[in-house]
Length: 297
Image (tube, rainbow, N blue to C red; front, side, top):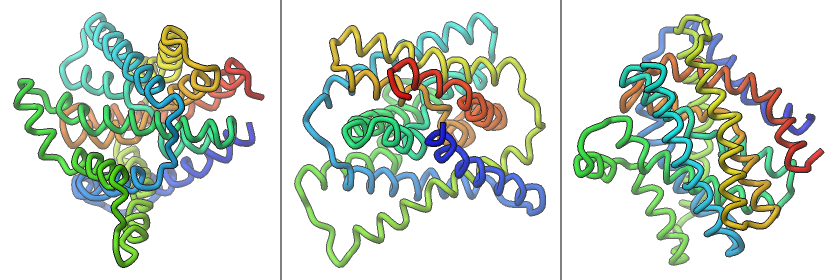
């Protein structure tokens, strides 16, 4: 529980700071969102690709299990949205909320506290896979259109090229000259607080209400996602630690990026913001249960 609090409390502090500032200063949210999507997030992803201490063990299995469970979540969210009679924007937001976990700043920290360095190595594999889904396929899905049109749109985004470029530089062991890697790292570190502050400002401008939609999105993310991840890992015959990491990372609340991308590319931004906050609050109750279920604590 102490590790959980040490992970969630700093995040809550930044969001609350954004909320407090948002009540007093009229920020241009569209500019803040564009700054995150087109500058800070690409740099963060590029930096993560450079610095991740990846090992060959279980990389393929964790990646396959992630995409298998994400496909199940995608179908479940679509079926649930159709059963609820949700409109196009709400459906996109529900799918993004279900399939975009906070596997970076929150997931990596909690996994390290719970499962140590071996768990963290595997959690980074999960994070990279989720980045591919979120930043490679997410914008195309939220924006809509035909397959070719969506693909061309995705290929124009700096998010995709930052991911590909980071993997290329890492794979070829290309050094960045003149301390440029430290500059990239410093700029990337600005991403998470800016995203969380933007979330707080958005919440300050939204009605403080949580209804069935936010609860359903949180349920898909916090309950259905870890169950599907565990099942995918079991079906693929992964090792115990691999499955532990899969389940724990999949049990993270909705990523702040779900709110940012819903507002930028298509969806219901205020609903996404409320769902992010509600899932983070509810994770105080669900994550300890998940830790017990995977044999931690």
